Length: 180
Image (cartoon, rainbow, N blue to C red; front, side, top):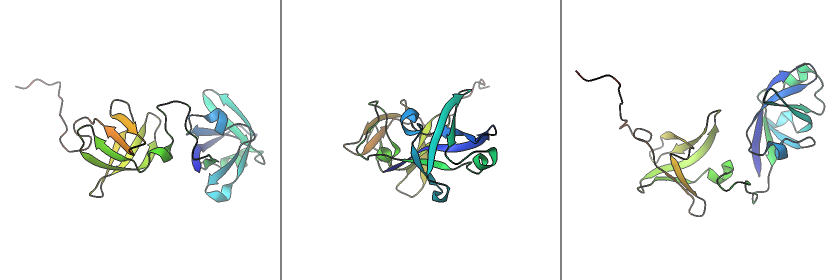
């Protein structure tokens, strides 16, 4: 199975290094020197990691055959994809790979059917479940412990406790103004 583990950012310096947006909880395993990664688009790869280092809190990688800034800049926005055994699970108990979550049914804690997870969107602040509702519309659900209360892989479902307005149009309006 293939998993997206990073997205190439801008070039760094003049020797072919690039910044990467890490999309794996195991960068030391997936983005280590010597790792051979497929790419999206496929025509850009495969890429073999030559070196990796952290600079000012960002991971910098250099790939074999990418020796200057121009070649590095040509890789911008390429997705890096690792081959992973489908039976492999994350080390932490409450961590999941995207492929484990996609297609789970989403229900509220009261048993109300919300829909099915079709995609996981990885944002800087949190991940989002993109959920297709039975009527074909989509709803985005933050993948945070306060809202997603249970992931049951055996039953193929995610249980949520959504705040008012998240999955319906009944939002609670809070105002600090006093009523006159």
